[in-house]
Length: 131
Ligand code: CTP
Image (spheres, helix red, strand yellow):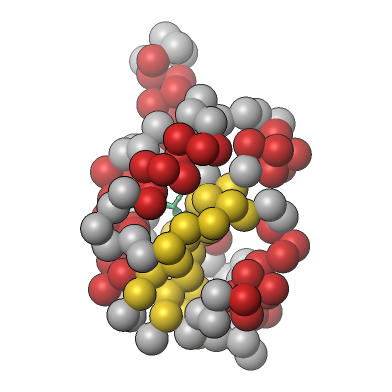
């Protein structure tokens, strides 16, 4: 079974590690779509701290990641699932229900997040906000 997942993976942290490791355990290969800087600016109004090239290189270096690509549009999820021949789409449970419309193309699984950590929390803590 081929697994696919998506994310920004900025300021790479333990929540990212655990999500990717569990995603890989659901199948025999894991493909990861790393969102582009432009997609983040468009959707969150914020450019990630690490460039898309660095984020992609970090994710690609993990032993439980087999293949990476740039996710350029949220609306292209179905074509990515088809192009990478994914059997299972994994998303964090913060997206619960949002990708059920793809369940005719693949199984859609939402995994629990790791408590207490996120790129936003790290960014805010380092910038001295919300301590
Ligand atoms: N993730 C997780 N546990 C966390 C943070 C993220 O399991 N504590 C998962 C997300 O659910 C997603 C993947 O890691 O499936 C990549 O998420 P990303 O958007 O990069 O992570 P965040 O750290 O939540 O980023 P942000 O604060 O910008 O939303």
